[in-house]
Image (cartoon, rainbow, N blue to C red):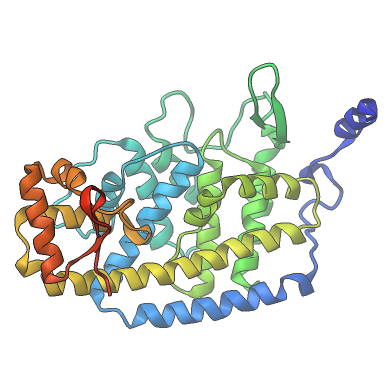
Length: 374
């Protein structure tokens, strides 16, 4: 293997923003045609399904999907927040709590404040002031950096992985001095491109923004919020699905697709990847709606028959969401959640199975229970 030739190629390689056709993105329309059509079909079905929910169910679906988005967009960046904090903060921001619930994790309040702004102002043009406000909301707790402004440091902004001494540079962003000018061009394009298919526009916007990488930190989260804004504008209503939930499930593919896309302004492969993510997110939202309806029916059927311990355990099981309560409920978990004795736990779960609220799986010492959502 000619390592000298490989090293020479790496040295000569230009990133997308360094190439002559930067911002003149090209792609094969025939390759993405079916994906764009799939998005239109899926979102039309989803909007119809959502419209059939009652107001309480619509609220529950919206909060669940926003919670998933906040959690997963943070996890992509290595921040792991509590679902309860995120959910409470979303309810606070959207005015669903009659009395605001205290949330002490500033990361949770920050990300949900940004998301609430994205949701409420989706029809408004995207501006520098809006991006600065998102950045400040999300990272106001950071005392080690300037928030609410473009990056200004002279050192290269690089995406790097690997141990010290064996780092690999995946991408080098434009110098800070070029950021204001490049962002003006991007914002002008974004606000004048509303005639593009929204999933295509969201994919281009995300790649373009991430390639400029205008902030000191938070670029990934804001970039995904920009995609959500593009999709919401196309739907003429806030998007009721979570892109980050799909991206986080396979972060390796996301970073790999982004790295390859930032080496050329022919972006067909990136569009195939990203629009595919959007379509999967819409499909996942349909499951969320089904789950919400099943949850409502479950409580309507059984809540009057539940004691306080049973209700607490079942609430915890539902908190796991569409994926289900991992491993099912057993006596050990029931005791940990409710603080009851093992004998009481066994008796409570058997009674839940008797009335049909629980489905028994297995037997003997390995007995466990699942919620009956049929």
